[in-house]
Image (cartoon, rainbow, N blue to C red; front, side):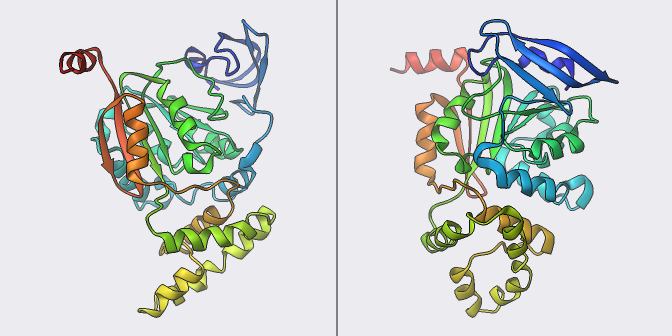
Amino acid sequence: MKTALLEWLACPACRGTLRLAQPVHQGEEIVSGALGCESCSRAYPIVRGIPRFVADDSYAGNFSFEWNRFQTTQLDSRQQRGESERRFRQSLDIPLEQLKGQLVLDAGCGMGRFAEIALHHGATVVAMDLSFAVDAAAKNLSPQPDAHVVQANLFALPFRPETFDLIYSLGVLHHTPNPRKAFEGLVELLKTGGKISVTLYSGYNTVYVRSTSFWRFALKRLPGRWLYRLSHLAIPYYHLCRIPLLGLGFQALFPISMHPDPEWRVLDTFDCYSPTYQSYHTHHEVFRWFKEANLTGVEVLEPGISLIGGKRTVSDKRQATSST
């Protein structure tokens, strides 16, 4: 943890001011210590350089396993394919050069796939996750001076209101017990004029949704290591799914990731069947979230159910008032 992070943190229980106690430094990093709330006296430990606002990884245990097993699979800096940056650009639809100097929240960072891209383009990034994926994220990101990693729950966010210029949550909210409530909590953290981008699973392909839901009901109960081994079946099964016409039947029977890279394919297949929660959504539904949160300039993007919108500025509010 870097001391700059304190400026943006607040007690998740009461929003009180947090003070650093008994810090142990290692260079610029605080590797252990605690954060104490001045208002309610709760204390939150700093363990391995990460402030921990949760006692455990709750319903996200398989994500802890996943992202510590696949620590670098999706990192552009390791794979040199630019795939994560292309996905990031699609989900934001703004020139990434505009991120320079902005304070950004990665809500559900995993091992830091997209945070790495934002940092590369000059943003200061707070990468947050409920799971112990934060340990992998810290290894991947913490050497960078503008990277901060936090373990916290989307339903008890440890940040001051109206803090961030940009918030993104890509492929995360549908793995929570209440995606809309999680979204609304994030909106409160946006500065006036700030933007929020989310990507959720699409519910339009009903065959895919029904098939994955059927298999996930059984498979998610397996220990993570067992499911990880089973996910390797996606490597040969991929070739059956590529057979013209016949492959469509195989894919409907047991959907897997069709990523051409075998390791990425195993990761995405594991990610499909391991979560405790997994919901599917429509553009109309999520567009309504944005409008009812009083966000403006809402755009529908790709992939899946991807939308971006902004928090109204004073001039936006005046225009809305004058037009009524």
